[in-house]
Length: 141
Image (cartoon, rainbow, N blue to C red; front, side):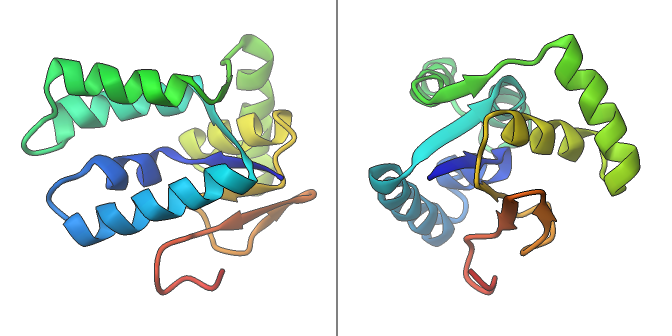
């Protein structure tokens, strides 16, 4: 199965302020990678870099940030292009999504993902054949 992982879950993996959540997500990602094809987008890389260097306290070092980005770049990366932006614009209107959520959903749809893992979108929401799931404890997956 092809699965898309939203930025917030990668951030939790790297955030040292919440070691239990980080460990949980790390184990979950390792298990997921064994059985599924993981997909991200250029937006995920851009957002992750911004969070790791500007919002995380303490911020990750330049090298740790680069290592994290290189690790994620090893997965399939859906590139942002004009058609993705235009289709996400329409998706945001039709599905009543925030702009950045629409870009994530559109990238996952374009990659043919069966599942989109995110904490930002409603657990169980469907976009065609793709379901949204929140892997964190307390969600229903």
